[in-house]
Length: 110
Length: 116
Image (cartoon, rainbow over all chains, first blue to last red; front, top):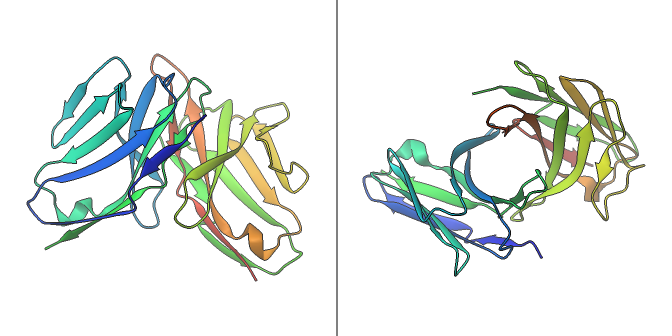
């Protein structure tokens, strides 16, 4: 079945690293995504990783994928107040429409 | 990136009335658009896949007569919530699929529907 889980809330201090975790259950996922949603805005694609990769780095963002444990994480280095948002992980199981987690609200304290 | 505009961003309506939500791809054509719904503290759930020029494909448990989808052009899909009830209050968000060497879905801003 398809089920993507995330913790609901994370609070960090400005300048620290943030790690947002996600678990999924469908082993046939081909791509896994991280989206950011700021208040009043749509979902913005941050980064994605193909299922045969373990890690992907893109500037301050690092995505780690553990296929064995079906665990995905997003690390944001040097977190800024502008990073405060809701972060969604999503999996693409080949159906084209995505299956989303419930979102993690990241709060960055100055 | 490509732009998808969703309108309105917020709407309050009375029970029993209908509400139309528009999803437009502003700078690309989208044969396929997706409609999602999100209840508080829950995942975005796919409601239906909207296909230009043909009937939408609804997910199990989604009433097609209640959630009317029209995708009459390559840049516009509409979702009409008919005879809305308070339990339809939710966050609705669309995405439009841009096909090409790297097919990617772009999301609208979402619509917060409150039925009173």
